[in-house]
Amino acid sequence: MSAAGRLYAAGGVLLAVMPLAMVLANRSSPLICGLAALAFLAGRWAEDAAALRRHLLGPLRTPLAGAALAFLAWTLISLAWSPFPAASLRVLGEFLPTLLAAYLLTCLAPGRIPAFAPRLGAIAVGLAGLLIAIDLASNLALERALGRRVAAFVHNRPALTLDLVAGPLALVLWRGSARGLAAAVLGFAALGVHRSISGAAQLGLLAGAAMAALARMLPLRVGLGLAGLGLGLAVALAPVEGDLLARAMPEAAHERLVQSSSRARVAIARSFGAAVAADPWRGAGFGTSARFAETPVAETVPPEMRVLLGVGHPHNSFLQIWAELGLPGALLAALTLMLMLARIARLTQPDRAAALGLVACAAAIAFVEHNGWAAWWTAGLGAAITWMRAASPADANERSERDGPA
Image 1 (spheres, rainbow, N blue to C red):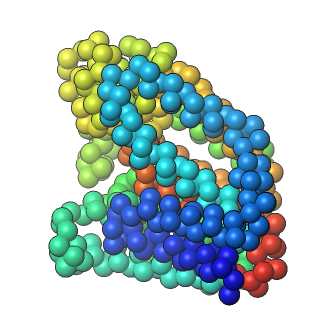
Image 2 (image 1 turned 90 degrees about the vertical axis):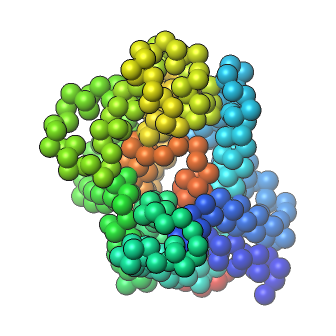
Image 3 (image 1 turned 45 degrees about the vertical axis):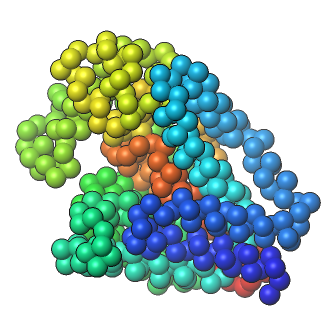
């Protein structure tokens, strides 16, 4: 095997085992994503250094990349008025390297992922789903054996990673005529997500599956229209999400969602929405959510709404963009999302349905969960997009010419 082939094999192994690694160490995906990206980067360099620049810079010449880069530029500009520059730089220092690794992975891995990697990925997803289910059923015996904190939420990040990766990996296997393995990937991922206590992961699973099914059944324009409407409303309504839910959610719904802390989430959304209303134009600055209660804009919020600004983040990535980056950040995020849908529109089936399913899954999770700049989330998205691109016919053909069918 050539040097490039060995590097691609190492990168393929790392990409494949990410879901299982997250079960064993739920902060591991940024490191795995970075190492996999370096392996594929070195492999491409060893194979054809002259073509490497084209692979990396070509995608940056598209309108989608332009919008995404403009959004990133605005995040950097917002550092100028962040009241906590050290905290903002710390968040940026975690987010940007993982984002760069994810970009390298999505650009360089498709077409060079070894034939064994999707099957190894299926095994990793199966073991991850089983371990989550068994560990939770055994009162977290695995966590006790590993000497870690015994809390059911430790499996939330692995479950969310399964949400992202399962559909695209199943598509790769389906296109490689391993349809039984594709079904197993979806089944074991659903088992892990269902058994976890993460309401966000379960919501993402339902949203992704529903969107993928609708995209298969409905005409192109209708499916894309539904996705565009959902994303547009997620951005536009984020600042008033808390007020809308406070009026619309009956008490019975809160009782059914008590494990998901729905009352607290609504109160948090109302507090951050009030902060956005007080200063919607530029936001408090990138990475300020962790100390938002100390920002100048927090002082303009009524005292009873101010307490929950100290929870760390709004539990809604769209609202976090509004709170930290203001109207320009929200507009640039919306533009990037719409251009992403335009790119997906050019895909053929079943790639388009799988891509829209991934978008719906990620958007549903982002609307109710976690810090939007979290490195583990960025790494999981990078892995999912890499598998999606590897499933496309052009990349599959390039791969099969080298390695045989996946």
